[in-house]
Amino acid sequence: MNQGWAKSLGLLVAGVVSGLAASAHAQAVEPGASAPEAAPAVAPEAAPAAAPLVAPDAGPPPGVAYVPAEQLADETVHNHDGFFLRMDLGIGSSWYTEKNSGTELGTATGITGMFALRLGGTIFPGFVLGGGIVGNSMVNPTYKDARTGNSSKDSNVSIGLSELQLFALYYPNPKGGFHVMGSCGYGSLSVTVNGVQYNTSLKGLVVGGGVGYDFWVSPQWSLGPSLVLTHGIMSATETSTAGNVDFSATFTAPVVAFTATYH
Image 1: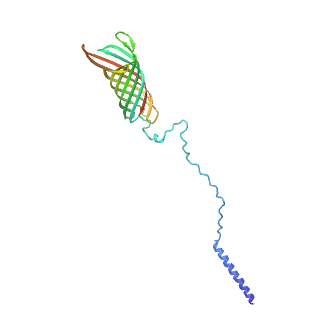
Image 2 (image 1 turned 30 degrees about the horizontal axis):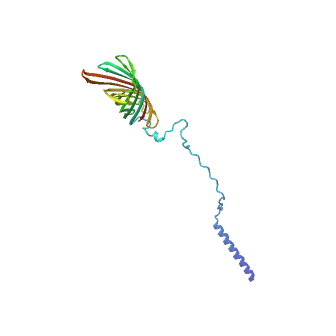
Image 3 (image 1 turned 90 degrees about the vertical axis):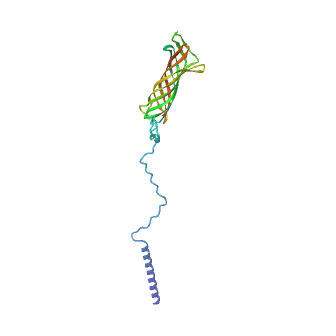
């Protein structure tokens, strides 16, 4: 009897313990919840990056000149404004005539070299006013005596016209290269023989004009050809035992010049 009761009591305790264990497991896992998935052993491959909506700048297309953005924004680039500097070197022909009290004494012709340096400023778009120095020199001229009609070539002789000049120069299109120029100034005549220069008393008005075209070679510098005409009208009065003698002379020189301009 005692052994049967003990066996029944053992079975009752085992049932209670089993019920308590099942209740604890049910509380740990909520109904309907699934067990967490195990992390994959290898990470999935990343998706490729999306292509940019705007293609990167690959530069200008073939045949199109590249101009930096900062220059496009600069209104002074390839624009004739502000400070003006020009240097000219030219070559051409010239004619010189001298008179004594209205009577022609003789004429001289020859190859002429020209140099000019001009400085100025822009008054309004494309219009420049300034001043400069200009020199023309006729070398080894052929002289014809008006009284005898004889001609002779004077070697190692040059006739020079030096000028202090005021000028006006105009570009119809301030960003273009075509331009016209007019000038007036004060000039003096000199004669050089065997390298020795002799200043004469012949002085007077010098006028001129020109036309040309400049090609841009940098933001502010341009190079180009021009045609320049110079005409000087000079006079002098000398006193001698016979009285006052009036001398006059003209010097005319058309030249083709190569110009370098900063503007």
